[in-house]
Length: 321
Image (tube, rainbow, N blue to C red):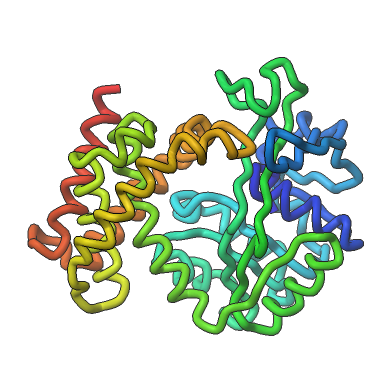
């Protein structure tokens, strides 16, 4: 697995469960793993526990993996990274016996992965925790900016979801031994697609609102976020959805009133996290929007009018810097 904010979390709890863990990283990141990774497990009200995660293997070339057997390969890269040739090289190196867990959100990702790995060895997962490179720049809570750099995360229950396959159930049981609690879901691909449809358009609009939650719940941005997410849900469900104006409007008012409380109770700077994480995976956001628009017809139509508007405005904003 990769050694980013997601891979470190999975590696940490798999190691606690008794597994031998290895990371595949770019050569320039290898030295940063040599002495272990500082971890910060965040809790409510600004509390956290910290330790150094070590005792893992590190590889920087898929050729180093040839001849080795792995029980599980976890793909933690963003969706746009699946477009590159390394995936085919990885599949050739780890052979056909390794289980594969894919965590990417784009609705076309599974098909891309199945081109390289035996489909019956691939299980889809859904991330249900928040993790990031710490400390966040400009955020004094909960970690001072002079804290040793590392990976911070906040777990809820369940912290992940897996497909209801043999691998999914095995992984659920193994992670539970390490203190990471997950569920298995029969229709996880469908659940994942619907969550992507609801969340990615809203995330894109939040970026248009300069990552300010108060601006997101203003009428201007909220209406665009809800219209685009509704279109995306219709695309993945294959049927038009009725506008739930009352519930969406009520949700806006609830969020607007609750924001001060949410920010105060959150174990970290929410806006800082959202800006950092989704800027880092910015190409993935545009890829998912492109996929949804193409799946909705690909040509100008009312079916994806709001999605197209969000995508085009986001491209313009990024181009303007």
